[in-house]
Length: 330
Image (cartoon, rainbow, N blue to C red):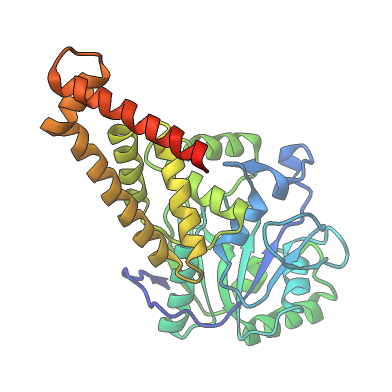
């Protein structure tokens, strides 16, 4: 059954745990540690962990490593026993009624796709919902399952075969009633070869997505969970650069962030308010240099023989003298 979920989907997500499979030999990568391979400055595993940040518990099946956020670690038995054995090990560490299952090599799977999967599970009442790739192939490691039937079918397969090592995932999915969602091509893109890695890295640097990718990477690196109005901040940086001086742009946006942090728990609203105040200041600053008075001041600073310029220069000298005498008095 294929399901198309319209946007926007339900704003309230059901409670779920996540299992991320991060093992495997990565033979087509020459045995490299695939979950640690960097795409857009972030490890593949960390990119997937960011997509399921809303999970109550996140279990990673594979070798321990540093991650961008806390997770629970486990290993399949036997080690290298394949995805079904790894899934079994992960599910044993969960307790939610819904389990999101992801592989660790999906660089472009985001929170919106996770939301669509969860919404499809709720709206269809089926035992699971999975993505299909552009060729129509099921992606059982980009899926969400109801925990009870998932555990039931895994146990039946273990009893039937005497083990789970080496068994294909299709033996599991063919026994479950699943909803299927046509994924965006990028959401189901996985990295199995170095050519795939190169393609993912090139895609990130495309003009239409590089800024979003960079902002996401910075927030992930700094542990910031905050959605801000990027356009407003870019407009502020532009106004500060043009109306004041080019170096004012990064310094102003830094100060806006610092002011928002000082505001406490204001979050995105605090950032927006600080940006509004700074933008108004930049506008007032620019208006002074654009108007007649500003032009006269510019003439004075340029050493013009005009009266206004002379007065401006004299005023500056008097102000400086006043500051100096005030300093002496202090």
